[in-house]
Length: 95
Length: 161
Image (tube, rainbow over all chains, first blue to last red; front, side):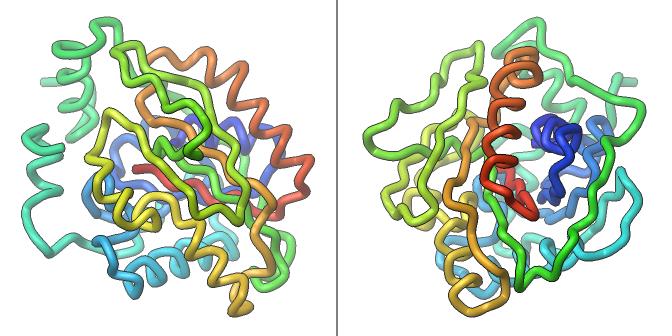
């Protein structure tokens, strides 16, 4: 995601991204990334949880209006508390 | 001591051992330039670009082989006919609720409610497993950038999966 964002940045587009892994964004350094610690495949939240989807999207879009310097990673504060799916994914023990 | 921190190292070792022996992260010393949003969100045209592996029923699925896939699919912003193909996550969740990784429907609702100005006429989806990044960096990525510029978008929202 960050590589693609870098390309769009280089073409002069305004961009904002979500990221689920801070350390990967730190390697790629896109212009502005917003961290949500949700599982892979559930970036905006659980299936059917529209309230969380809206909250994530609103928070991310709001950061696009702020004067962050290039390379900023904003922690939006969303954490996954439903189960251990994210932790297992981070150990490559779940898909 | 690994080359990378945290999950970056876990993924690096996993992909090299199990999937693609030449894999390495493409890294940068400096951030890419940031262009700020030039008008309020409620007057902005926003485009969705995701790596969810989304495609229309009539479009080819993404290549789920070990070499990855740097191609993309162009999707009209008013579509509800989404399919997902991706090696990196369980797409059954997205099949059930596309907004979890490809929030086109939610962005349409935000536009209808006046929170954003409008949705760009087309969205773009890649499939996030791209171990060889040259085609993305020099062909498909710039192609999509050109289409977003042609659509005069004010902001691109990028969503990983």
